[in-house]
Length: 262
Image (cartoon, rainbow, N blue to C red):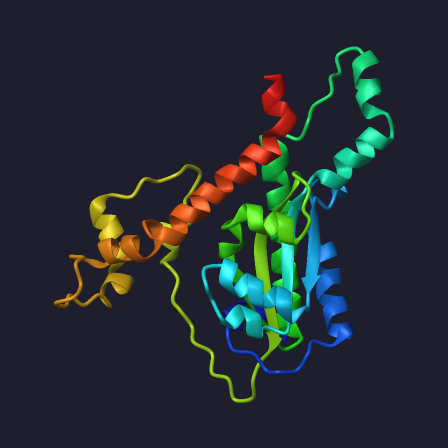
């Protein structure tokens, strides 16, 4: 399968064959992640390979109670990681060097460092996804790893500057698996020329028309339209509020000394 076919045929997989992923396949998946584009060749991420059933069971509960997570043969936890670089800086006297060098000052990891490392992390994760797919291994991203930060930090013994960004479920396709493809928005609503385009209400209606067509108002449904129903199920739901709280805790821990010095 070539790259174009891999991208166009890949869908999220939540039902897995019982086979454990071969070490040779897992090595190729990790190598693909390591070869992803990275800012300044820094590889600002770490990947925790999870095979322990006990840990998978815990994550299936802490990531919004999704049982299929526990049934994936392998999970990859992607961390945005500035910890290694800053530990290296400190071990090589960069704090002292910055203090004596004119025009230079020591900086703790800050917001831009975090965003840059998140970019690196997700590019690496997608490389892993595409390599897995080419090997007949399906995947599913779990954004709910952003919830329950304190619990996940303790579970994986994470320092402040290595933060969980995405969890990836991996497993071979079951024989006879039928892929379900979901249409994406029309290109004109996503790709703009030169500057951003704020969509009008009419354009938004056209953009969401296909999704909205599946909404059916019933006696037990309080929402009047697709947007209200989706907001209730996703954006305004309890798990989303927990995710917001968790990310705030993550950012507070990440800021650490930087906030104290301001």
